[in-house]
Image (cartoon, rainbow, N blue to C red; front, side, top):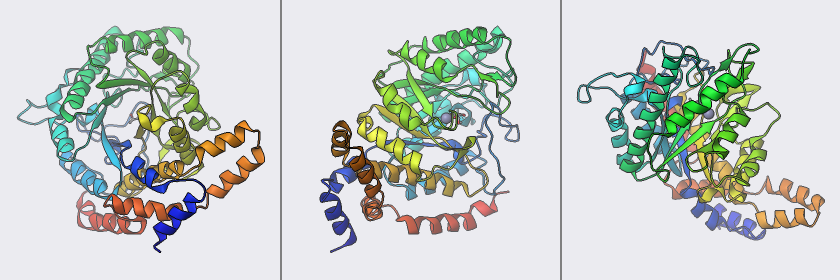
Length: 421
Ligand code: RNT
Ligand code: ZN
C-alpha cells in the first residue's frame, strides 16, 4: 500500500474523507501578491524612492525584480512551484507604461490600458486578478491621503481610487473572475493627535466619493482594510478597526471588510474575529501575513495561528465564496521567490489541515460540554499523516513536493537572480 492510501485509511477511521479535501482545496482561490518580488517598489516612480505609508521592507538580498519583465519571469517560476488556484494581486503602482499606451501618467490618471500587459499575463495563465489603489510612496501623500485636511490632496487620491475602480472592473471583465479591490491607506499620526474625528470624517467621505464611481458589485468587490498603527503613525490611524468595520457594515451593498492579521495588537487573533464578522457580513476578505511583535510582514509559516485562521475559514463555510483570501508579506532579507513559495505553500497546507478535521464531531463535543474530549481530539489531529496527503495533493496538481521545489529556486538564483545588480 502506498503512503497516501495508508493516510487515507487513517483519516477515514476518524470519519474524514481525504479525497473530498483534495478536491475542495484545488479550487480555492488564493491571491498571490506581486509586491513580494520587488520589495513593494512598483514601476510608476523612482525605484530608489522610499517606501512610505508606515510599512517597511528590511533586508537587501540580491535579485530584486527591477522591471515588469523580471517580475513576470519570477512569478512564472513561483507559479510553477505552487499547487492550487492562485490569483494575481496587483497594486496600482505596478502600472506598466510603454510607447503603445502613451507613457507615464500620474496615479489619478491611470487607465485599464496601463494594466494590459498584466491582463495578458493573467489570461495566458488562467489567473484572476485582484487590485489595490496605492495610497503610499508618492509625492502627493502630504503625508496624508484620503483623510488629509488639504482638499486638493484628497481630490487627487479620490481620483486615484475612482481610476482603480475602473481598472478593477476591467480586470474582472477581461479575466472573467471577480476583482477584490482593497482600499488601505497609511494615514495617521506619529504622536497624540489634536483631532481624530475631523480626519476620520474626511476619510469616510473620501471612500464614499471613490465608491460613487459606477461599478458592478458582482465583479468588483471593494474592501476597506483596517490597521492599528504603522511606522511613524504609532499613535493613531484614521482607518482603525472600528472605522473600517463600521464603514463596511453601513455600506454592505458596495463594500466588504478586510482584516490583515498583522494589523492588531499582538494578543488579538484574527482567527477569532472571522466568525464574528461572518455573523454579520455575507462576505469578508483577509490578508494573511506573519507579524513578529509588530506588522513586520514576515513570510507565512505553517504555524498555530495560520492553521487556526484556515480552520475558521473552512468551518465557517468560507470556501464557498464568503472569505476572499490574499497573502500579504514582503521579506527583502531572503530569496524573494523562496519567500513567495514558502508562504503560499504553507497557507495551502494550512487549508488542507483544516479540511482534514472532523468539524461536525468537534462541534458536537463542544455542544455536549465534552471539553476534555475536544482538547484530546484536537491534539491528536496534529500528528495525523497530513504530509502524505499533502504530497498526494502536490502530485495531483502537477507541482513539486516539499523536497523538490527549493533546488529549482536555487538554480534560478544562480542562473538569473545573481546576475541582477
Ligand atoms: C499595510 C497593508 C497593506 C499593504 C499592501 C502593500 O500594512 O497590510 O495591505 O501591505 O497593500
Ligand atoms: Zn495588508
